[in-house]
Length: 117
Image 1 (cartoon, rainbow, N blue to C red):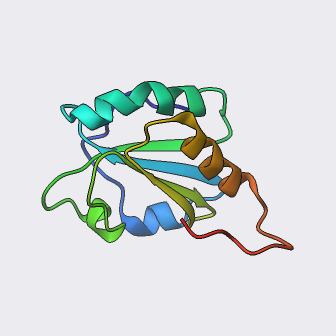
Image 2: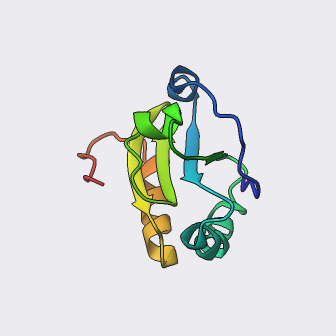
Image 3: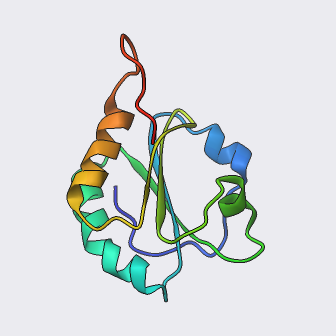
């Protein structure tokens, strides 16, 4: 389910890794132009998916969670299944990249290799 506001406090990495099911962790900042521009795409992709947990984390200097995921540009969306990264989209500009990433976390991962993000 889409979350519209960035959380100013971040969960611990161990808490994110322990989440069950599908989770999208979005790193960015409310004042970031790239983040603002991507929001319609992110909202359109995640709003119809109440089965997906959306963690929208305000990132910045000294923020441990973003560094643990090696975030360099905003927005960065990390797609997880049971705490394991399945896909990553950096600065999405079209819905296709998000659709493909969602397909990777929907996939049960059996009988075929996972594509590299």
